[in-house]
Amino acid sequence: MTRALSWLFSLIALVAIAGVVGLFAWQSVPVWRQEGWGYLTGVKWFFRQHQFGALPMIYGSVVVAAVALLLAAPIGFGAAIFTAEYLPRRLRLALKILIELLAGVPSVVYGLLGILLLRDWVYDAFARFDPLSGDTLLTAGALLAVMVLPTIFTLSDDALRSVSSAQRQTARSLGLTRAETIFSVSLPQAKAGLSAALLLAFGRALGETIAVFLVVGRQDNNLPASLFSLRPLLDPGQTLTSKLGGSETNIAYGDPKHWAAMAGLGLILLVMTGVVTLLGTGFGRKSDA
Image (cartoon, rainbow, N blue to C red):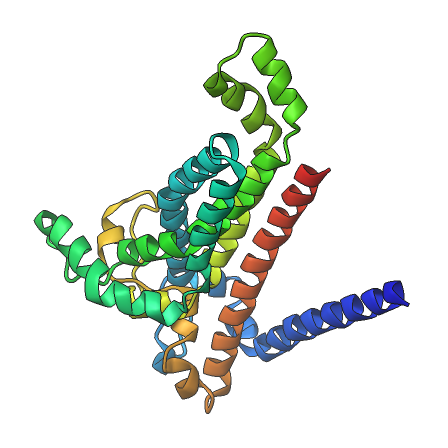
């Protein structure tokens, strides 16, 4: 009975996901007919002229999520190594609970803290580069780093704790120090789980809306001449989620092509987060095995 119910609810979840993807795909057909692949590669978005290019928003989403990982990954991995390898069990659980509490803070609270504190800090820290304001891609990435930190820490800690203690003891008996054991045994054994932590945190960052919406600046068509340029990090930008979370979604509802373009953004976001999440889940299962 339990197995049958599990299969039933799993099937319902799959049907629901397939239905959402199908709905977005069907709703976005007009914009794909008009723009073709140019919808993904276009660099200009002017909805009043029915010109729709999603590349600046895809760029913004990827850059913001990448900045978040670059800032959060060293802290998350370091904290996971400390708790898994050095702390006794009770202190480890206490610290883990404290860090995981960060995941329970509502996104809008993070966004308000970003407005009150973070964007002023970013503006002051990079004042010599003359940013327009503190609402930048870098600000959004730094804010997301705090939000994805619990994901990286928790999954990394679990991956490290899954390494057999017998392997650590064998390494120590061969004369390796604790640090050498961590880098020679624990981290290589847990690399699949650590990769899963990064991928799932990346997917979490891609899908965040309200916190990013409040501090990213929401400037359309902000795409650098070089994708490897760092200057756009100090400019306001737009992500897929900030675009979908803004007022333009309501404006688009009365215009079939504009609405199709917004539905297309939802489809792109769904595919991106879905692919990253599936990859992360696959690495996690490999780690468990």
